Image 1 (cartoon, rainbow, N blue to C red):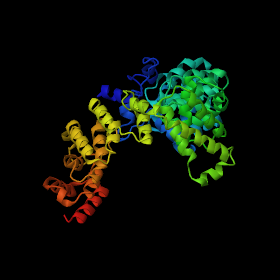
Image 2 (image 1 turned 60 degrees about the horizontal axis):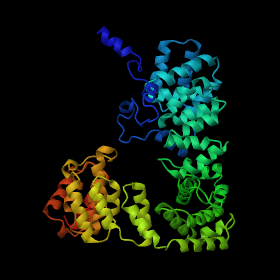
Image 3 (image 1 turned 45 degrees about the horizontal axis):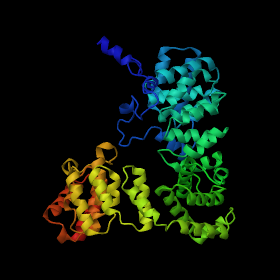
Length: 521
């Protein structure tokens, strides 16, 4: 009994790998995992990508508020700073493991600054210990955030190592920005090692203090694996896109980087878009001019199509734009320039090569251009799917056809390659996120379109009705709504009747009742 009692009293970090050590051993190729993943995400159906939770709420959430829980946290920290004890550290750590640090960190840091009697040197040492030795992400984040209250050049390696992991890049970025004399250059060093939310946080804070940084912003700064739209306007402004594209000729890296920026600005989204960018008229004009003379790809052509679509938007939008640097003459000239470039027959073979590529980025832009050029690429995509039967992208594209014969061929392929028996385990309440539901998502892509093709895909619909993923059952019901009852067959009638008796979701049950009533069941 004594042994078990002592184990229960062990600190939560003891006997576990510290997050700092876990990241350090990975070197520069840091993946998104952390040693506390299973514990942290326990009970959650959705797992955010590294840094996603803090990134999304930081960009779209409200300001941090001080809570009683946060005050208790600061009081424990103050107590530890005045008289460091293992028991106080244990209590502080235990509280950190359970709270949402990101949602309150700004308020907590303000309270730390105001806390009477707090000992700065001891706080710094506690912050360093948490960042270096903690085995739970929230404790590490708290430690990093506290380090940002001090001059922290002496822990540069610690902050850079933790910052390489996207889950901690935001905290490391703020700490470096607030606590190092050469913070901008240090952030630039870190920017090249992150690619998701971490990169977004750094680029938003990076000063264009040198030509090297400006060049990087225009060529590589915008690309990230969350949404380029978050960074497009920042990179255009801070990198000096207007001046760079005004040259008679530009290098291919600059043209490609500008393509990413302009594409994202035209897409719009969660950040500033093309109408927020004050140099948009000149930049778009220069881009069209440069593309005419450059070694171009399907991606360049796709952006030209997007520019042409932008120029053709309704007049109400253009009335507002005329007070922002645009003129009818510039709009007309730019549209004419696009129309001279786009019909060139050289694009056809280039687009078909892109569609047939093994690079999914090339395939994406090839498909976008093929639609604009009126090229029939279905058979090419089907051949690509046959070579890559697990690639989701092709499922989304092939099901868009209106040709019954093609859909019948595709559904037959899917029936042979999607593990239907593994899906049809009975109705549940699963949302279908995560790699374990990859097959369910492929099935869902097809089911959502089968209402247009009566009599095709009955086996897939039957599987969907028996899937634990709620959206699969919804899409199966949608498909059956589009079919006459005579096309169902005995198995589907029986499956719908059975599902009505066991369906666990009230909203699906209601839809089932409506379906049965409409079909006379």
